[in-house]
Length: 58
Image (cartoon, rainbow, N blue to C red; front, side, top):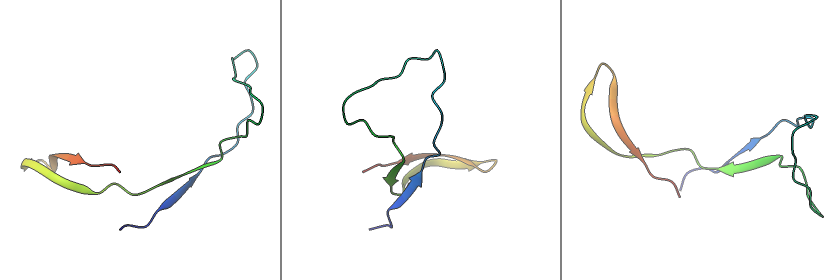
């Protein structure tokens, strides 16, 4: 299986006048974990360097 990666989000200030959800125990969303996309199938012939591709997520 491929290596799992983590993406870190930068913290942003609340924008005055925009709605924001609040609830007890809410914490800022700081990161998410993901796996790099893996090409599983391709269809048709390459044209000018482009080809239709299907990526499967897990």
